[in-house]
Length: 274
Image: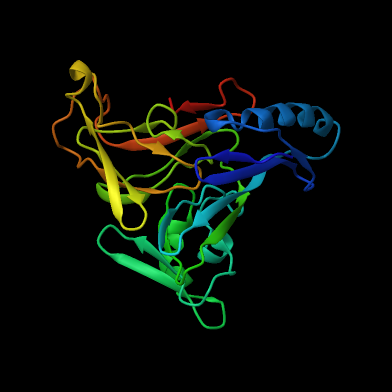
């Protein structure tokens, strides 16, 4: 099994059958990182057809470097295939110094969980909503030494479109899938006019890009450039408020939305939702 470096994160994964056996993929790049997994799945499906196993999952882990300060982290791997039962413990684990904090944004204010003197997370239910695939949070690591967050789990969903709900106003969001690329062209976020994406820049500022329907002769585009996301990276999205003026040319359907369609047995594997 090889490790693919995408942005600042590392992804390693393979295909798991219903009995827990793993068939690993080869090196993958950017939005094609699941292609090798699909090829493995195709071969594995033939053997599974002769057994009592009926499910295939892409499993793996992502290593995300955490600075000695704040880092925006996205969970793009799921605990159990439901997309709802992840916690800060299942997402990040427990090997962090006392005083480490995870901050989640509710849309109005921040809530947090912290690592206590015993090494256990305190207040983990406060940030559970931000630990699900497609969301994200800030992780603060005290002291001078950086850490590495190792996220382990299943890629969602493996066979159907998945919607990443976006609220009007500020959201912390990410790709549902562990793939790097441009937020719209590669990862299929559907922006509305005036949507603005803020990327965290260590040690304490943001860079931002705004989607404008006036760009590119009215076809729409990002100013100054389309945001590029790494694996395991979350961003702030200030999403369009429903009812604001839109352009049917650059944004059919109006409001901001993010839906990704993955199918292991189709080329290309990743598509925007119908």
